[in-house]
Image (cartoon, rainbow, N blue to C red; front, side):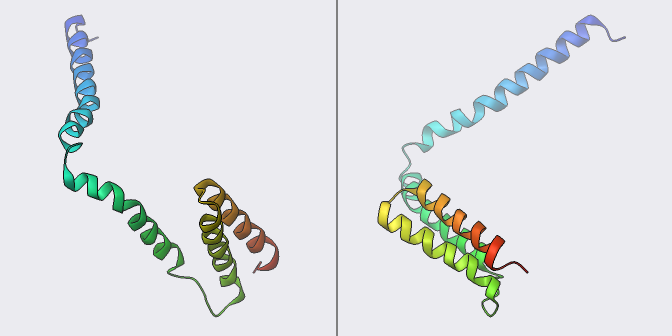
Length: 109
């Protein structure tokens, strides 16, 4: 059985390390809030991330087979809904619903 002082010291060290690791991001963010580079990236990155995700999701799409039409139709619905309503939640849910319906009914392997 470990000594009581040793156990208390171990708990205190663990608590100090945990608190420090949780406080570190907030301390690092304070100078970044005024950075012009971070402000520029915060306006440009969402579109860049979406383009990367689109390329990743469609990279192996079989365009010569019928089952490749479900993701393309879902993409068209998502883009159309977003251009029409400018509502990200509606666009995502609509595109997902179209993909699930087409993939599970019309284009089953």
